[in-house]
Image: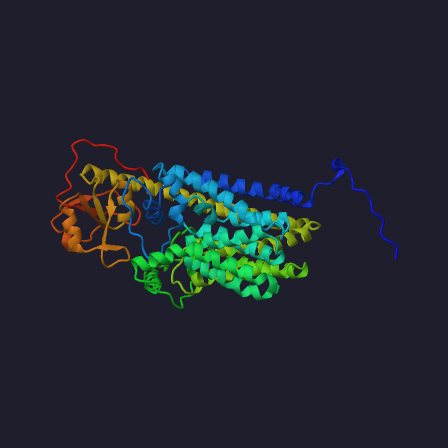
Length: 511
């Protein structure tokens, strides 16, 4: 058999561009505009003038310099606090924090999609990114100090890197990304990280034997690095992991068989929390996409099977179902942000299905226009809900600013204490400590302890309109306050240690 002739290599200037470099550039061309549009939409709709929510205040107060830290309950993890620390330790400006998180979340979206570029075509990835980023939950929570969106980014990163590492044992970057993705999810919400790791562990036996140990080691390392602090804190503050888990379940209303599909449908109209969720379903049009989601996901799986990409779509779909299951079946209330990790992963099969539909519709103008109009209407509706929530947040900020100003005029100034309804947000804006008596999940002091504290520093207890003050605050001076969310016609009962200021000063933090 004659040997093959050896050909001389082409000169360097005639070499074609490496395929890897060309693929990166193509992916960047498709994905960068999606991330940029996501950042711009946040900066326009969800950033200007918005104030901190109740949960955000708890996370931010842990590292803010202007007010004592709020009570940190059992279910919470320190990931969000670490995320916001670079800004909150430097400035109390909520706007600065919002801008920082908006830009950071856009970069995270780009990175979490970028790792998929070797697995799924760039145009499909761009469509998946647009579908996920275009949801009002993704837009509204992008600049917020909340954990669920970051779990979603961690899940996208982890599942993509898992599939890459399973295909290529030499892809060390993918193994590092798998560790980072699981670690990020565990830092933000350890329970979600468990539900993310579970389907990936189940997928390991389908991988070639030689690659299994590295994948299992990466999953374990990510979980330990991200969840280790939560476990240590459980030992130090709660007497062990099981007692903390039990307390966390109590705070969440107890975990059991509680199908919450109807609650989540109602919440899609713009309710950030539906608890209890016995409200009428007044905006069913906002949930139309939710009914289409399982159909489009199934279509994406069929398309992946026909194009020999089934494993690349089946794993993220399984991980999405695992992440969604506890919130749909075990938690008896709804918050749309809980399902963000599932939406991020399901965007991949949905985008694959829609890309197939658009390809088939190219020669059918009516079908093509129908698809385009349906997507445009979907995005317009999501933007409208985001704008409504942004306006609501701005109104809340103005209301809390007025309440804090009234308290300051009556002498409730640092060092001070606020208890009762909405104490966390009012106290943080006033520069006070928020203390709640035992009986609720934030119970951090006894009634006698709070009464004793009120003798040494200005103290206010907030009650709903018409409600009597707690026994330990009887005889305190009542003060009508401006209405704010959840409380109309409410009062503040001021301890004798709170003396009206002689000169009005603009002391509110303005958060």
